[in-house]
Amino acid sequence: MAPSLLTTPSQALALAPGAAASRVGGGGGGGSARVSFPSGRVQRRGALGMRVRASVAIEKETPESEPPPTFLREDGSGAGSGSVRERFEAMIRRVQGEVCAALEEADGSGARFVEDVWSRPGGGGGISRVLQDGRVFEKAGVNVSVVYGVMPPDAYRAAKGEAGKNGAAADGPKAGPVPFFAAGISSVLHPKNPFAPTLHFNYRYFETDAPKDAPGAPRQWWFGGGTDLTPSYIIEEDVKHFHSVQKQACDKFDPSFYPRFKKWCDDYFYIKHRNERRGLGGIFFDDLNDYDQEMLLNFATECADSVVPAYIPIIERRKDTPFTEEHKAWQQLRRGRYVEFNLVYDRGTTFGLKTGGRIESILVSLPLTARWQYDHTPEEGTEERKLLDACINPKEWLDL
Image 1: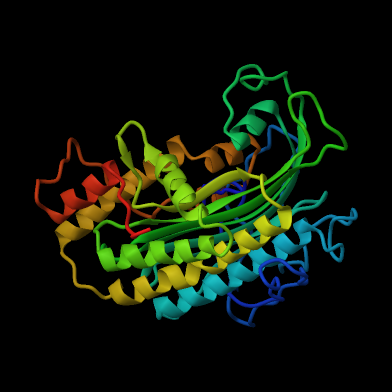
Image 2: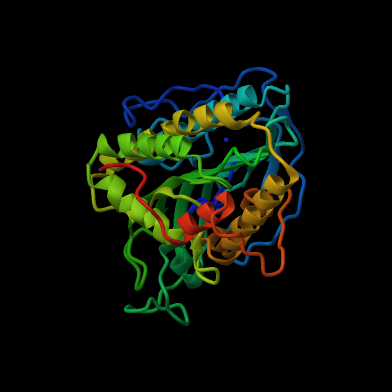
């Protein structure tokens, strides 16, 4: 949520979803890194939870009572520099606020996100927000993170999705420790109603931070992210709406993006040991740096801004749909698949654990409840079987 700063869905960098700050104009121009939140909107608490000593050079986080104007270092690429780093941080903090505000309104219970703010002495930090046991949402996490650190070679490969041994890329020289910068927003939303789908989104920006190219770890930057839908039951109106919003966002930049990133999403969220996908897809991309940097910043911004219009109308339609205990049991089984993917395959989770990331943020994507039932197979012709078949054999939901 993983997530996940650095790679996927999940969770590694930060997971977490309010209110407003300066909008990154046109998806990428200008915009202050200073973000303000409505008074009383969020409940703050001390940064509790387990802390894991990083096995690499990432400093231990320090709890903060209030979010600072920026988590960036004052090193020429921070506040006031107009850098991609600055504008990306401003964007993810704005989106976190806007998404949290939309979710609280949809929940309608008066429940508010609890917020943890943390920083590190050498720069970086994050804001984790979680709403639990609301009327509509069982658990909703929306996190942002800005991280500076030094990755060991195996973490660098995890972030890049490379296979290799002893610190060497599969086809290159052995890499030494790799300084890096990463910023991202990651969120997973688990509604209570079985007919309301789970949503995950994650958008991140990464730079290696070495002063010059190093063996096996050249200086580089990339964007990654995506938004994907995981329903327990197929309601085609909802799935088509969700995919149409993803396509509209992609088509503003390149008509090849949606079919390319839709397939990438289907392939990425594959649970190999089950021979099925986690859900019904969406878009996913990673290590993206083969386009103009400004264009990709604008694209990531457009995708993040599409989360609310893609998801909230579905929640409003389904949050009060009547359901039975059988419907709920099936939802719990599908959540079990969600847990399996995130803990076994998600690159963001792997990255976060290998770099000593904040455990509560890394694992915030997991639902409060899930179920594993021995040798369960839904009967042919049922709605449950229809969902499983779509997870085994991904389909095109739009007429392209």
